[in-house]
Length: 101
Image (cartoon, rainbow, N blue to C red):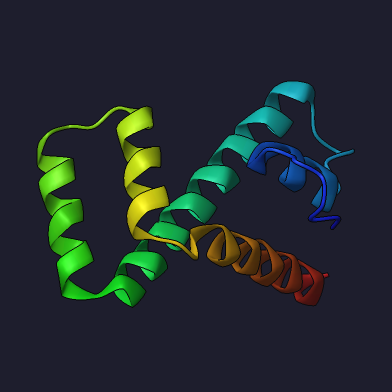
């Protein structure tokens, strides 16, 4: 994976796995689900690494039902290594998929 390119998570997933056996609709569904799973896992890991103060800030944010912009702002301000965690999660998923072949 070339991390120098500015790809979306969905694009990285599409390039990282073989979806040739799936219809376009199935492919989109799988990519959406995988993207959500990676984002959730990355967020949980990052919040855990961030400690109690960051977790409390996140809980306060969630109580206010934030939009995507507020969530992105929280991540950029409070979870400086979030993108690295996302990359690690993608690599772990690829490794798991490779081991299951």
